[in-house]
Structure formats: structure tokens, C-alpha cells
Amino acid sequence: MKAIAITKYVSSPFDLKVADVDVPKPGKNQVLVKVEYAGANFFDTLQMQGKYQNQPPFPYVLGAEFSGSVVESNNPAFKPGDKVFGSTQGSYGEYCLANPLNIRKIPKGWTTKDAAGIFVTLPTSYCALAMRANLQPDELVLVHAGAGGVGIYAIQIAKALGAKVIATAGSDSKLDICKKFGADYVVNYSTADWIEEVKKISKSLNRKGVDVVYDPVGLVDKSLKVVGWNSRILVVGFAAGQIESVRTNKFLLKQCSLVGVHWGAYFVQDTKGLDVMWNGIEPLIAKGLIKSANFDTVYQGLQSVPQALSDLSTRKTWGKVAIRVAYDSKL
Figure 1 (cartoon, rainbow, N blue to C red):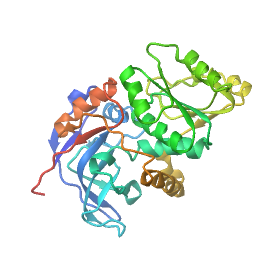
Figure 2 (cartoon, one colour; figure 1 turned 180 degrees about the vertical axis):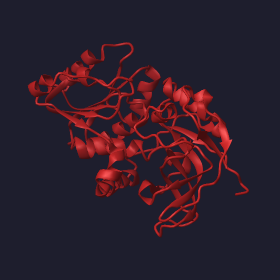
Figure 3 (cartoon, rainbow, N blue to C red; figure 1 turned 120 degrees about the vertical axis):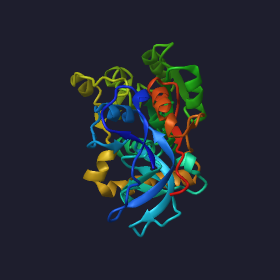
């Protein structure tokens, strides 16, 4: 089969090449999936450089999120022909192997394209807001990078839980995306002092600050300037590239909680939590409160992976980037 195979670390997405590799064979309790779409993630670029927390031994196939059809299954929950989405090492290939914990059947009314990039992003945002922050109706949430993959789902989940949302983004077009997916207020951090703008919005609502900050960027220290009493700041990621050092007395003064979110660790630390997450997410999808948030352009073929990752890294995209994987019809 064709795949983006990594035999040595590379510094640029354009160093990635399509190669011929063997079709993986499912072992005990594994499922073989024919990949239709792969979801691109920023951490793919870290992994290709050897800088990610999860570095498989060489050689390996890059990519994590996918959607497609079950070809062969050694688990009774999945049958050949089932349309599924999930996450595994090796989604940038025509076929991939998945653990049943890491795949779900595609929601009714959704296509494989719709579901290509939700297995990591959607649960991350639900875990953060519903489970870690215990978000309550009418609370005020600040979502940084609201037009990004996790940000768009954070906006939708916060609204589904009854909260009000302020979203930040770096362009007016991305602010329009935030509003399209439900943000009540938007702030362009490239043209305005977002701290002052968030304070103004909070004051206009007769509040003394936001209740919850959703931060996939690395803006904890600055966000402490806009939070209120008994607030929570969710540490989701570090897209800005820096891990902050923050003086802890600032949390004491506002009785603010700093809450870490690592959804992937549930597979090791708390597998029961996975059911809690999906049992919370799936009714929201069924009610139409969460919609797919794919970028306008669908990248075509594995040969487009370098461009997709480059565009993602340079912030030329919004939402989730989906790659249509061309597979070998003879297999």
C-alpha cells in the first residue's frame, strides 16, 4: 500500500515522501480499516521531527486521525463494512490498524469526510469543558484560537452546555468562522488589545471576568488578567511553541484553578472516562448541537500531506484539515 513512511526524522513537511509499505495485518482484538480520509494535526509535524511525546520506532507511518471502512475485524463490536472514525499511529496510509478503544462508528447523518478529524479534537474540548472545568450554564468562556481544530469544537460544546462564549482569532475571516459556529463575541488579537477587549465584554455583561479560559495556545499568564473569582484556566496545548512559567501567587489572588487536559492519557489512566466522554458527546451530535468543522479545502491524495501540514502550521487553515486518501482498489 501507499503511505507516508518515516525512516528518519525530517525538519520540513516537504521532506515527507509517499512510499510503498506492507498492508498491516490485524492481531488479536485489532481492526483493519481502509482509510478514506485522514485528519491533519499540528503534532504530526512534531512527530516527524522527533519532538513529540509519542515517538514510535523507525520505520513508522505518520498520521493519527482517520475515517473509513472496516475491512477485517478481530473484535465483535466491529464488522467489515462498518463506517468508522478514530485515532491510531499510521493514518497517512491506505490502510491502518486500530484498537477498538480508539474507534467509533460514524454518527448518523455524518459522512466519512465529516468525521475524519473529530476523534482527537472533539473529545479534547468536551473533556476540558464538561469534565475538567465542570462548565455551568450562563458561565462566560474565553476560547483562544477559536477557529482552530479544537477551538471550533470548544465553542460548540460551550454553547451546547449553555455558556456564553468569547472567541479570539488572528483575522477577520477567522472571526467570521468563530461566529458561524456559535461564538457570542469575537476579538481579533492581531489588530486589538485582546485583554482590554475581553475586559470590556465582561464588564458589558456585568461580570468581573471570565469564568473559564480554554487555552490551546500558551496564554495562561496573560489570561490571568481577564479571569474572575473562582475561575478555571484549561491548559490544552502550546501551539505558540513556548511552555510558560507563571507566578503561582496570581492564581491565589483570584482563587483561580489551573487545570491540565490530556485526553489521550485516558486510554492509559482512565478507560472508563472514555465512555463518559462519548456518552456526553454523542447526544449533542444527535441533537445537532455539534457540527463537523472541516476546512473548505480537502487535500487530495497522500501526496498532498506535505502541503496540508505546511498550511496547518502556518495558520492558513481553520477548523480541521481533511486529506482524501487515495487507496489501492486491488487490495
